[in-house]
Image 1 (tube, rainbow, N blue to C red):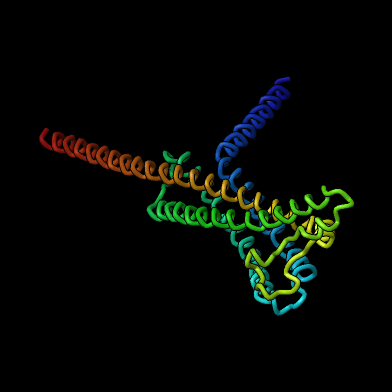
Image 2 (image 1 turned 120 degrees about the horizontal axis):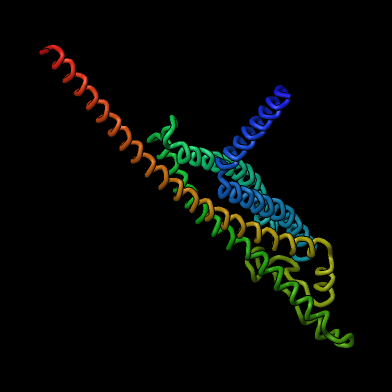
Length: 284
């Protein structure tokens, strides 16, 4: 009976120890950085994936409907291909940068929670945290520009789609009026004015809006714009987290300096007391 009771006690202690260990591990997780990382990965993935496919669809629509001569849109094609390569670089960079910021969040959380232990923050660690604050601020400003730029194709596709809806809403017997409704893509400056045909009118415009390329590209540009907005929000979230972590590390370094000075003074006081006792003993 005593052996069984002892085994039950040991098992309960082991379970309690595992539970406390799990609670301690969960307490060291930087949940704010984790949420920001997931949001950043999601936003960048949406922007890069949807933007890449939408750009390819845009080239197809342009070649089939607005510029039959390849030389007229050669520059635009090269720019779009370059943007697709840039998208690959953005995806790779932010995958690594998000992981680095998450690791920095784990480091800072450990530094704050283990302030009174053996873990010590260093000047190098604080400088790295400050560098991440500056870099994230710069990237946030840059992504604001990307977000605004990604809204331009959404605006263009929306204008074309709304024009198609006007054509569809016209009565059947008003074909002459429908042929007078056109979309001239040259006015946006993406192809030169001598491009042929340069515009789509009436039934040709309505047929273009019914193609899968137009429908898919339009909605993918919307999703890419939303992904860019999500990335901006994630970077703002990261910026607040990094600024807070840097302030915590700065306060932690001051606390460590105070503790080191206090420990040194206590050690000196003990040395003085021990010397005084030795001198008294020598006199006696």
